[in-house]
Length: 377
Ligand code: NAD
Ligand code: TDX
Image (tube, rainbow, N blue to C red; front, side):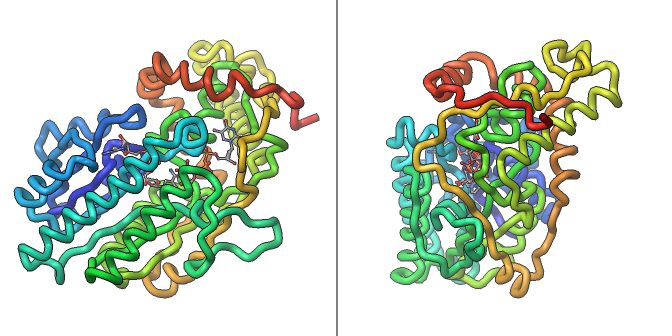
């Protein structure tokens, strides 16, 4: 039995991890800390907090006194560190918060965990899992081999640079202080509770509302899509069975370019409207409500600066050492995700009002439309 600190537990992957952890290890005690930035949402955790099956602390990982007090109170022997600023476009717009949370916040957490584990003589039975990204490795050409754990670090966005810095800090704590830490670098996640600023939910919601689907550049950029449920399963496996000091890459085995991803979302929504006549009344602005193709909304817009062309993950280390190979078929995963957003309209309506609208204006308002075309044509 462990007492586990999950940082960023009110974010997209964090919420999914809390639920997955409770299902997989019901006897562990979970404490979530989250600063409740714009990206956080407690709705799915509220029942667990109310029935006291998890504890929630609203707080900042930069607050050293708070973190130390939590370690002293709960004597954590597991830390799953997910708290971060996570959106590449926001890091381009305003990078400072990324350095503050992703670099300095990670440092504060590492230092507090190390101090506590040393003083309480818990170093031997504790583990710190640092959740990072494949973006630290930079960009691949279409024919390049996938990233391995030995790939050089070549971050291209302020977000990726901040995550790379945090990975280096973790590595240095292992080498210098014997910190019992592990690092995972995963590919693009998708699934329930993802903030609508990210590609897949943004496209689903815009299609339902009949708004343009803004694909950056020519849409040939490739990501390896990892269903969040498979990711969480791998994270629990790594923290329990991984070798301390090691890095494990986690991928989805689903490389797709953005044009194909958006096309698949559109086709999935079109089919959902045919299967369920009630959707047309709920989402009258969606082209599918009047029998038209959602692909008609696709619009190619000014590219993201420094846009990485391709990410691909070689996950053989994770598979051979830890036996993790839970892959979700991409069409199935997108089908389930589209239906999740159809079934959770109040969840995303809350998020997409107010400050989010200002972000959409800021990020997309200045992009010109390069070309608008129906991909079916
Ligand atoms: P997210 O933005 O949805 O959630 C991040 C959470 O961290 C939010 O709840 C936010 O309130 C919290 N947070 C931010 N700053 C904080 C601070 N200073 N103190 C405490 N909490 C703070 O992100 P996500 O997509 O769930 O990503 C989780 C982790 O996984 C991040 O470290 C991210 O870099 C990494 N990651 C994500 C993906 C992906 O595709 N989503 C891929 C690779 C790696
Ligand atoms: O409106 C859009 N149009 C578009 O074409 C948005 C939001 C994105 N894109 C493109 C950019 C990327 O090629 O889609 C792709 C995916 O974009 P994001 O969802 O912003 O993800 P990405 O930049 O790849 O980063 C994600 O994966 C790695 C997460 O946001 C990071 O937190 C994670 O580390």
